[in-house]
Amino acid sequence: MAWTADGCADRTGDSLTGRSRRALAAPDDRVLIERAQSGDREAFEELVHRYDRDVLRIALNILHKPEDARDVYQEAFLKVYKNLHRFRFECSFYTWIYRIVTNVCLDQLRRRSSRPEDQAPELALQAQGENSAGDFFDRQQEQGAASNPERRLMGKEIGRRISTALEQLTPRERMVFEMKHYQGLKLRAIGEVLGTTEETVKNSLFRATRKLRAQLEGLL
Image (cartoon, rainbow, N blue to C red; front, side, top):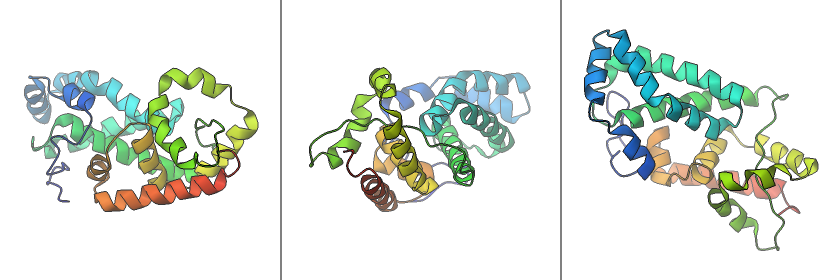
């Protein structure tokens, strides 16, 4: 898969979620971007205001820690500011920002993996029959935020097991797992965001799922 000079995937059109596509196409985005590229600070601040919730949401969905998400928010918009001159409208502005945010999140996960005192985010678990291991990971997206109160009531021991299991993943494996099961992105879209192929993403997801199943044996 090829990437354009300004960091956009050549095939962006239909790979991100419908909500994402709707969020990016404000008709005057181009005017604001061009003004900001010319040094208009007010135009850049308007762009920040327009996309700040999306950036924070992406960071929270991936990292699950408000303090880390706030750090990513600041770092991502700093990168947007420094690299805005490279944006050439060859993909949507949202897609361009999305890739910046996820790459900053990936760096954050790498830093977090070097700090053992940081706990991984808790995942939902529900005891099922012996054939439920594969279904569990596929159900994550469907469970969604509505089940969060029930999920928070899970036992502390289970939470510790899950945290330990997630810590065994590499940052990229964990990023792929989060994007697939919590953000609902297709493998092709994940590949576009991470600048790699769909097959590489599929392999990373397979390894992540296998590791988690091994670590959580007896709980699934």
